[in-house]
Length: 385
Image 1: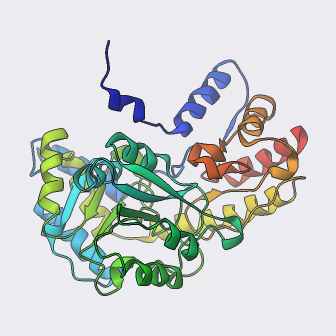
Image 2: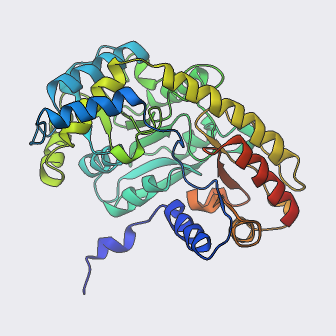
Image 3: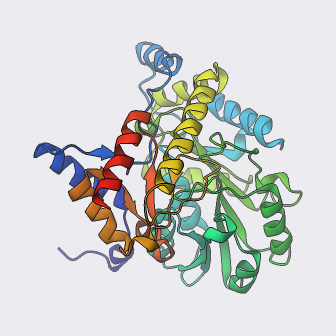
């Protein structure tokens, strides 16, 4: 079959490839501790599940508007007002099946062939994949360990050009667990004032999972709300990865265009899921708080453990649920060590290179697993190292 040339530009998520390898080893009888997949290991809160069941039994099994049901868009707009302190109308919200479509649609709608998009590296691999797919030029900005994986403003200054169409920021970050502080965000905004045509895609999917400090969105800076697309969703904070529930918040001009892309691709997001998402935002929030506190305890456990391993050096991540240790002193390359830990130690992690070229010398460990398993993983790593 002759595929379209653009298909050669698509990347993938290595996490699912490693998961498949790990599952194969398990099927062969080998014990594997899974620290590769980036999803909470907690169940979806009961009140959200009950809302979905009620919706299903009520007959909510038909099409909805492509941008989402009005009551959910209103709930999301109110949530953004509460958490970011900005005025948002329901018409600026587009609901999608997962948050990835917002990345895809925003890049598809705004980036022409040859346009440059600056994106974090190491960073979520789908950024680069989508930029390449639409014919844009992917311009990586290196997230440096010595800066706690925040942007280096001088580096950003050098990368901006008349061809820059979009800047992607992600805070808290995958895979590093780093955050962009308010000071970082303000410095980025100050620089971007000189580049008024650059659109910002702000990936804030981990905004509820910050352990020190608080989340600050670039939309909170005057003049940046209309030129920013907020990407958020329900997967991480409410343990709803399999529900596929995400959304974008953007200006009034762009929202109907993104909704049009929804019409042409997915028609709409699952109706029952949308009703459950209303309950997620309107119902009790104690499950989010408990999950965050548990992740914080696990973070402290895994960072201490990783730093006790010969050749490992791990910064303290301030958000999300990932540890990103430097492993160069072990003498292994990232992929080599990743395979060694999987096949000889029974610990599934991800090579830093799964998140871009600047991830060489690092591994990503997702601590979305029990404390007991994290302790056992550290023991196994020490043994094979």
